[in-house]
Length: 581
Image (tube, rainbow, N blue to C red; front, top):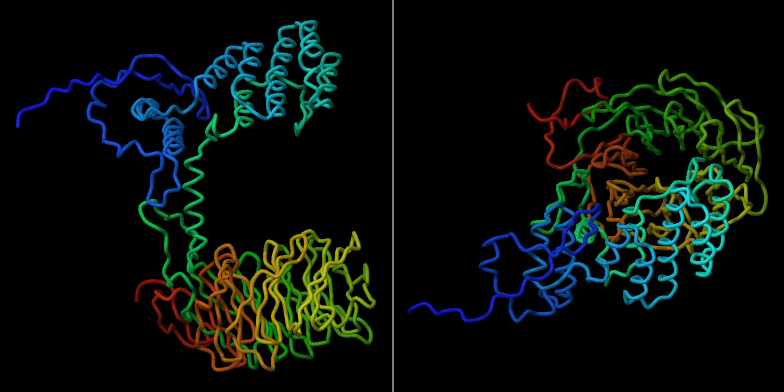
């Protein structure tokens, strides 16, 4: 077939947009198009649809405007102009561009007039934007030593807006004593200075609705939101790398969860009851029914070795707490004394005792200079490191305190005070909040960010409570076994996205915190798993303590395993997590 002559008229050139200003601010330019033949063969648009995408939820005009803004923010000004010309969709209306020109050129009265004709329906927004423009006019007049003109602007133009009267008063003070006047919200005491016009423009555009002005970097925000939602929905996401791709949906494999025994620690001679990693993840402390505690050191390769074995308690050690800087650790015997140890030397620095009583739990205050101790006489005592009692809480609201936590603000103490209740007490404000369960509470654990509390119950459930503001039950976890003994659970993994727990079935159970789904039940121990601890500095390292006298260190499933050297070199079987033979 022969060629057919195109008799249609070429499209009229639309105004181009030039992105000469910072932060994606754009103004219309009437310069002719210089793109040559780059637009000679545009892709066809099916009926110029108003809605795009398979789900029918994306408006074409909004979509194009957001893409255009993204091109400008990335520095692709010609591409942004071409997209506007080809699509017929302008990033900003001509009146918005006029306002931008007027502001940048200091045409203040014209700017206010344009603002009123821009189509804003909210009168308060018009007044707030007018205030910003006229305030800029006021300051520039002062900078030009035109104090009388500035005063006239304040009296005749700013004050009649009847908005932000406190600010108006401050502006009047700046005329009388400009050197002493400090900018509202300033963190320093420098005299007030006129903001740049570009900064004024940024403030103005924040007031404009998105129909007039697309929010800065909106496409980036939407893409980031999509990636974060995919990550949060990923059952096994547990990696700190940033290898999420826009080319495909994000989905991690099960291999991101520590599920293989890398090392078995066998230095204890009886049941191991309690575990806790140091805040920096470089040490693990274990407490046992053999009346000892052990500080294990974690080397750069993730190998554990016994640094110190702590002797001195005259009963099983059931509770421990690391100092905020990890240089010291408290150990608590069963209704016995509390001992303070130096982590570096293994020396016992102090023994804390109370006549006729024994301690059952311990925690540090965040200053590292004092501690909180649960006593079996139904009291909670605050002591300094020298053993001086600073305060003692006693009364109807305190029973036998089996678990104890001090929040990061140092003001709130969390403790069990009845069989089925936990009290969150603000010691300074004397304000109490209460978590009430309908089952006996056996233990609890506080998240690192102090937002959540994990509560183990008698009925083989673990409950997650949000304790920010009004306490609220947000999730339940089931699947582990607990019929007779105290079992402890913990938060762990990247951003503490997982829950791990011991169990009387000799397995370690792991749930996804958000969904509540049980994703792993790890066999390996030959006795009850009493306690678990997730390394806060390594999302791929988990430790478990058992009645079989051992501690198991769990890592990723794809790591190579071998037995290295005699047992006395590493306190048992070693499962190497280094590559090679």
